[in-house]
Image 1 (cartoon, rainbow, N blue to C red):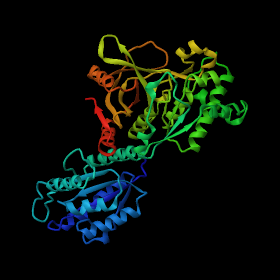
Image 2: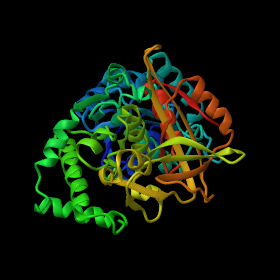
Image 3: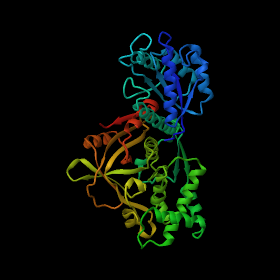
Image 4: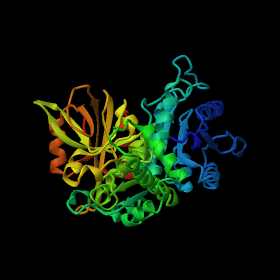
Amino acid sequence: MDKSMGFGLIVANRGVFNRKLAQEGRAKIVGCVKGLGYDAIVLPESATPSGAVETLNDAQKCAAFFRQNREKIKGVIVTLPNFGDEIGVANALQLAKLDVPVLVHAEDDDLNQLTVDSRRDAFCGKFAICNNLRQYGIPFTDTAFHTMKVDGGQFGKEVDKFARICSVVDGLRNLRVGAIGTRPAAFQTMRTSEKLLQRYGITVVPVDLSEIIAAAEALGDGSAEVKSKSDEIRAYGKIPARIGEDKIARVAKLALVVERWIKENDVQAAAIQCWSSVQMNYGCSACIPMSMLSERLIPCACEMDVSGAVASFALTLASGKPVGLLEWNNNYGDDRDKCVLQHCSNVPRSFVGKGIELVEPSVLGNSLGMDKCFGAVKGKAAAGPFTYFRVSTDDSQAKIHGYLGEGELTDDPFEMEGGIAVCRTPRLQALMKHLCKEGFEHHVSVVRSLCADVIKEAVETYLGWDLYVHE
């Protein structure tokens, strides 16, 4: 999460209430936002009689000020220190035309301060504000409690959560996804509509795998950058003694070229043709470079799963943690609320939660030859909470849809190669039925954090994608 992001602040006022409440509320919310490390972009106090927004003229001034600072504002926080003027707030947002998330806050009344001079009635005023925002077609986010004190501690958590919502919305609307290679012919499951993604601001940037391989082959094994990247790979995980230096260097060269291409093309997430062309035509697997990029919060999806990269990027923004792309892969005995998430794999190191081993993927190695396949990550995730998320482009309905939920990773044993996570999800069988009926892919993005509330708000309220939330 970008702590330097800016929030536009609208302090609402209604003239029949004590102006001092608006002035005090303004000072409190500016102090709160700045104290959390965010930029507070608010109309100068001297610009309106109360230092707040009430009249049409106030709204016009606020909107003009916001437009001047458009590039800085990733979200708007509306605060009601008293009842507030509903039309002033709605006009300010409509005229500013920022198209960013909006958080609506109303201040608590104190039971011993309900005189004409000290009462707020923000509890009531919030209904009027929200009613007008709905009339104007302006989507907004509500706080956890209908009213809450700005300086009560809980509101700071609301602002941090709102910042993550803003990060997801802004990040997805401006996402550039790298498509490195082509979809393996056998995986029609991984089809994705670039046009549907583009409708929401998500651009797919393709490159032929042959260009990446040719650039990697052109690098000398003994060059300083290859040696440095090889050292980084050795430090990243345990490598069996049977793996020669030439195989490590080959993975290092691939990693360097992929990283360079990502930087040159301003790509924030990527999907890679991880089999079997790269093994047959270059001689290694792409999992380690993908894992290392995901660890650096540039999520990478295997098997050219562009939609999987989109979901992984959303989880990365929502949590600030590395995301793994796994498969709903195995039942866990007869416990119908447990299953096994698995891949070859490219899971980031910190997702596993303990030491990893860098090896050959066993399934591909057995069919293509182990000598061509070094470059996969092996490890089992430690216990802890997790959030899962998947988006898919539904061409027949011309929409993007997805599913979302939370569960726990367990310490249950499971003997299988690759990246392994045994998980428990309440009502798992109902979830599996939904995935099958709706035609979702077997891939799912997973993060070791609870952030479903952030994804839900960003996706449903501001992006308008169809979302099934598994409770």
